[in-house]
Length: 144
View 1 (cartoon, one colour):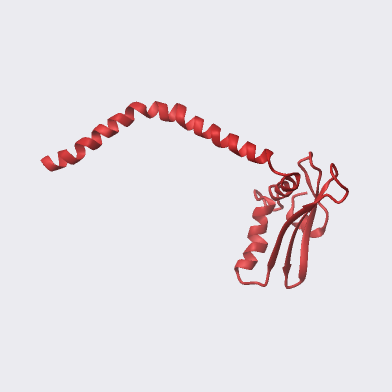
View 2 (view 1 turned 180 degrees about the vertical axis):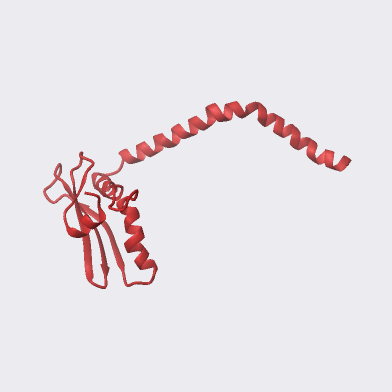
């Protein structure tokens, strides 16, 4: 019995020490950590190029499947087909501004399957936060 008391005694003392600092942890340390993480995310987003922002806007836009983004919908369709062994090659995302700076981006996701090369294209105006499908494949993926 004495041995158990020797083992448990320091544990109880440590727990008492932590009980005295829980308000500091809960009300000061946790909010500070959350604020620092949020600031890091905002700084990272500000440093992205306009091309990366346009691609991200399309990826994160609503898909035709309820509560899914376009990227999530692609994972449940194209990426799933590839993981199941179908002959699907994913070329990925690209974006360009064909008419120069300040004009809309053309964002494209392309892949190759048994039917050949397929691509979905959207038009994104740099400040608008709206992705407009330009072809049938993009229309099938996006909510419009």
